[in-house]
Image (cartoon, each protein chain N blue to C red):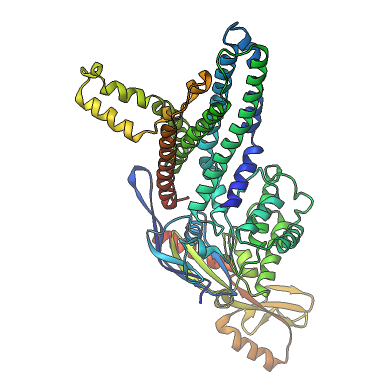
Length: 263
Length: 307
């Protein structure tokens, strides 16, 4: 499995997606300029823009690398030669997943370092009203990366059942949006304001809430921007949720992929 | 223990409009260690499907396939196998050297040995100069040779090659035949599919012919060639002024004092008796037989008629 992780990383670094992302990351250089246009709260805006840019880049990575990695191998017939080796399908799939997830983590670290530099620069020129809590910002980036690793696991699951890239790519995007609002929809369903909605729809919404990944739980941007304290219990719960959900998705993915006919 | 053992193997695919297609019909086949086995069949006969089941890429609808006694669905069955898929494709962002290295590491080869073997196979397959270029820049023939290199690098006991000569120029084809013959001399087992009879005739010990998913023939190549003897071309030295008829047969060709007579098998003994009695000099006796291609074509046409 380790060699598969290495091969995956090598493939990503030599891929055009990676080069495109490097170009996108250059947008960090514009953040202090754009933030200074606000005239006030320059540092807060720098943090917001930096974290949003990181999130956007990680989203692109997750959708395009996660959604196409397995599909491309099957479509280009790489799987025939690789699975003809004494490599189990589980090891192959997990190697591919771990390689992609590791790359997302590395990207988050590099982009995080760039964000720190940008925020440092902005706060040096326009001192912030509120203190910047670097550890919170780091945790925000870490949990953002975890969110996208969870999204990659979703993309892998969709890839195992698909014969084209439509489902893995567009299905992953749909899951990202659905998972992002699942918590709000759930809270709305529980509120008195939703009494007019039919019970069937409420039941479906409730079922989807438990089925879909809850990405909102990973969002710590507000805490990072305004230097608010982080709830330790909530973070541990999210971390546990992440491990359980990813393990579940990968278990289903490997079970499906092990039975898949490679014609 | 057999190198490859296929028992009652059936495979059905569901096509468009839920139509069931019998891709393989009750295939039974054993390939021994040290044997060169040619799996012959027209396009779409089921050769690649059989190989994919042996390699665990497809699951059989019924029956089993085993490699050295290990069920083909398990990764462990491929520990002593070098596999070349049909029209192979490899991670094209890697170079040949990197890919061969990756394959060697999957077989847990020692670094030093892997380096030596990599160099040997890349040089043998004329890829040494291009070894550091990404595979995406290779021609089709070069990719095919990378496929052979990665199948050879770990020196397995069994080679499963799906159309190994496909996409190669005559020089490449000759090289592959040489390699297969070398493997034969080393006592390796080679199972390869092809639809080119000449490949089988030159290198194989045994041949299996598959038509429309059914194994219609399974025999040693020499037996097939022997059973195909139809007659003999006897070259006799005769005086140029006598008529070109001997023992009741008319010469099919005359060149100076040498006359050639085609004698069918049943009449051969009596013809030669006449030659002996007359004291005529026999210059040459050539066997006239159906070649493997004729044999193959007759099986295919029978298979298609019955199908």
